[in-house]
Image: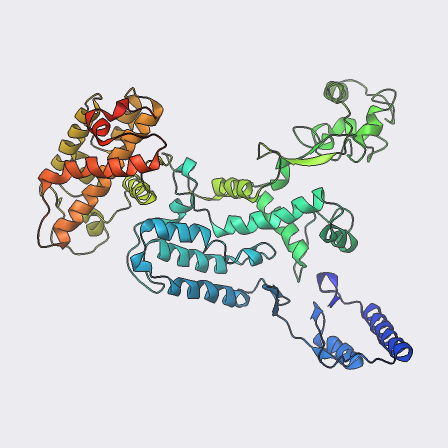
Length: 531
């Protein structure tokens, strides 16, 4: 494979290497009597003129492999910044979607597949190449349609805002995470490897082509770029948007022999040359290491002159206070990642950081209860976000329906707040649950009122979460009850609804918590169950 950096072809270098290769093959034939059959071999030129690669193929007696092609599951050659280059990956995802029976899967199954399979299928390409935004939008649209249970070309209304679903649970989403941040996190992992794994082959190749610093922090002009320079350029573009990933990398000092005192970020707050520029201007040895600096007789030993008071003296005193707490350790210096407690880099931490910057911010964080199934938790999230096709929401989108009154009580307008909180049926069941759990009674008309009441009651934390799970089950069954009234000829019985809440919540909570309790304990007073 012939390669030239940044699209610049060095013709004399390539011709001389081809001539040398031909001579080696001829010598091998003359010595051994064996002729290597090159007729089935192929060569490829990356960022090179096709005519020059053709001439090389003719001289070697082999074939010319046109780019782009797939090797070990990854695309080689071609322009990865072009949208049509990614058509095979998009089609692969679409084919995978067509093999699943979407309508037979629950919301839990669809969410699991969206997070694990659809997010992992293009991961090999995402880890090397920068994905065009047009391709990311197509893939996100496929994931959104699948999560909502719609066919690829369906024009059905989507009630879940996909950007809100991508947000982490701590910030009010479902924690699915976007493909954009996964791509950028995987790309930045190469920067981490370059700085922390100096002996690896990839690091040595990058240094041989781009220099010892890998041109990190250097911007490039337009035109073809190598994979590495695309990664560096994307890190620069993210920093311009307020996401400086290099800021979270810091050198942990060991023997201090490989860390530059002024230029590297080995202490909190960044490089000393940026924090104390007046003192840095006095330094005559700009690239001096931390170990060499601390071994000098005094701190200003290598200065071209002593500080003269004012700002210079003030900054000099701060540097003196900083180096007082520095101590040597019998180990080499190493990079650490400040976003993880373990100080080791992880793509997940990058994804959370970029998501927090680029995805919408919501007021309430997602309350996720492990005592009930995922589908019930997702439904409770939809109640919080008002992302259900209630009659009021359907009407507000301009869709003609017979009535916007609540199907359960037939009196109030069917909004999410009315259906699950202020409806006479919902209030009656809520009072029965409060009496059953023997907690303070209070009426609530919205999700926010219900959360305020839940926070105010005094119960052990685990029991309070179980009570919250019971309300989630009530909302789940209320929605099923409402759908049966609308879609089925025979209406269900309201008298049996509370019994269904008790039995269904018992079945789910008992099998999803570590404690063992019986039916009688559940009926008598569940807030006394030891968890």
